[in-house]
Image (cartoon, rainbow, N blue to C red; front, side, top):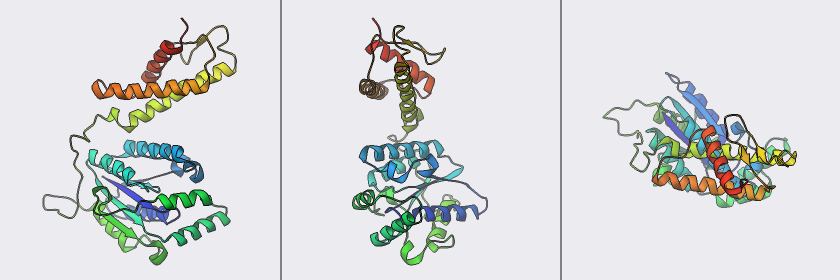
Length: 302
């Protein structure tokens, strides 16, 4: 049905806007299915998620994968996060376009001093807040949405510090109207995105497949590390994850850095192969089997 991207500075009122929009959507008939995707729904902490560029990039990847899995013609997905990078908003727009959905951006335009004040109040009350260093870094790197960009349009702007945010706020009402209005051949003010050749990609090759590959290979690495720490790989040199998977054969202790390097290489090779051949495996069992075969070739017993 639709993808809504909420963006703004840290502590600018985004979560309040997401809740008000969800409640307003639930008040219309027929009631759409609404889901809010944010860091807390994925059990991710604020400071933990933005501690450095690497974990922040991983956060965006996890959020994008969850959005990709959740999009459908029957629900409204609200992405309640900073969404502060214009390139990332473009990626989300591409997901909506590939799924033939409506799309819009809601921007909480709050002055930095108000955001800082609200963040400090949250800290004083013992609620989740940003460390000063992380807060300053996020404020500095924020890329304001521009309605002239396809991925920032249509743009609905809220001014929480001036007007507050309520379910009955005019901007919320406008967004609800845009998201729920019936579309026919005469409709001109509502745009349903249409995929191009570039976005008509097999689902297995998109973020969902990469996420499953990342998770499955990490489980194999964890099993090897645990077995070696318990001495299970001592003289037997065999590690078995399950009766349905090949045995991992190693003739020496393999350190975590080397395992991580092998894992990165495997994922890179799988991605490159999918460009000219079949897509990478989308199920965990197949991914583990391929990764174990790869490990046995690289570090297996002779």
